[in-house]
Image (cartoon, rainbow, N blue to C red; front, side):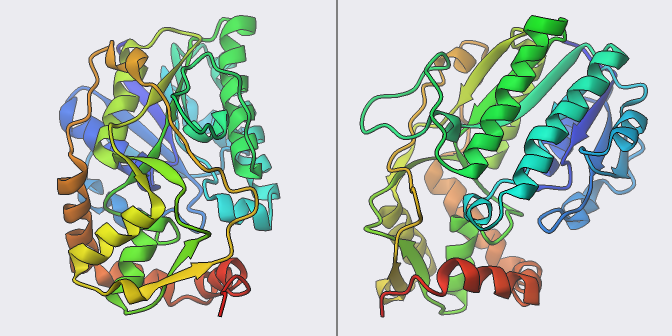
Amino acid sequence: MKSRRVLVTGGAGFIGSCLVKMWLREDPKIEIVNLDKLAYAGDLARLKEIENEPRHRFVRGDVANPAEVEKAMAGCDGVVHTAAETHVDRSLLDAKAFIDTNVYGTYVLLEAARKAGVRRFLTVSTDEVYGSRPTGFFKEGAPMAPTSPYSVSKTASDLLTLSYTHTHGLPTVVTRGSNTYGNWQYPEKVIPLFISNAFSDKKLPLYGDGKQVRNWMHVDDHARAILVAFKKGKAGEAYNVSSSVYLRNIDLTRRILKLLGKSEALIERVTDRAGHDRRYAIDSRRLRALGWKERVSFEKGLTATVDWYRVNAAWWRGIKEKNAFGEYYLKTYGDRRRG
C-alpha cells in the first residue's frame, strides 16, 4: 500500500518515535503527521534529530479528542496507531487511562478514518491479548484471554480495529508484538529500569521466582515489522511480531548485571505482580511470509542498549528524579519487599 501522507499516533513515544524516524529515513516520498499528547512517557527529545525535517509535522493532541483527531488526520491516506497506555503495573493501580486512550481513543481514530476514506489503518497491539500458555505458540486465530486491565484494553482496541474492515470496509491491519527494548525506552519498563537501577547501585526488584518467560525484540525490528504489515498486510488480518529470543526474567536480569559488571547481590526478590502471566509465546510466520525478519541479535541489541543508557544517563536520571516517578515506584514496589 502506497501512502503519500500518514498520521502516526504516539510518535513521541518509544516505538512510535523509532517508527517515524525510520520511515522518514527510508522513504523520501513519505510525509508524516505525528499526533501525540505528550503524556508522562511521551518526549520530544526522541524526535530531536528530525525537528527540522520538512516532511514531519508534530501535532500535540489526544487520540480521545475527536476534534483534534479530525484536524490532524486531514489530508492523510494512512494511519498507524501506536499511541497507548502500555504499562501493566500502572493499569493495576488505575485502569481508567487505559480505557480512555486504548479503547475510546482507538474508536475515535477509526471513526475519523472511516469518514475520511483512509486507505489503510494499522493498530499496534500486543502479544498479551492471548494471555499465557505453558508450552507452544499462539497463532493469530487463537482465542484471546487477556488477564490485566492493560491487556484487556488492548484486546478491545485490537478487535475493534479489525471489526471496521468487516463492518465498514475500512482496510485495517493489526500487529501483535512481543516485549520490545532499545534506546529511549521510558525507565519504568524492566530492561531500562534494571539497567538504570544497576548503574546507580540500586536494587533490581524482580517479581516472584523470576521464572516468567518473555520474548524479546529490538525496537528497530519491531518498527520495521509495523512498516511491512502496513504496506503488505491483508485488510482485516492480524500479524504476530516476535523474535527467536525467549528468556526467563531471572536470566535477563543476570545478563544485564553481567554486562554492567555488577553483582547479583543487587537482585531483590519482591512479591509477584497480581495475576502475573507466566509465559508469552507467539508464532510470527504469517508476518515473516511477507518478507520481515529480525535483524538485531539480542546479544548485540542488549549491549548497545546498555551503552546507550550509559551515555544518556542525564535523560533517564532526569525522569527518575521527578516526584511523579518516585511516587509511582513506591506504589508499585514499596510494599512488595520481602525484607
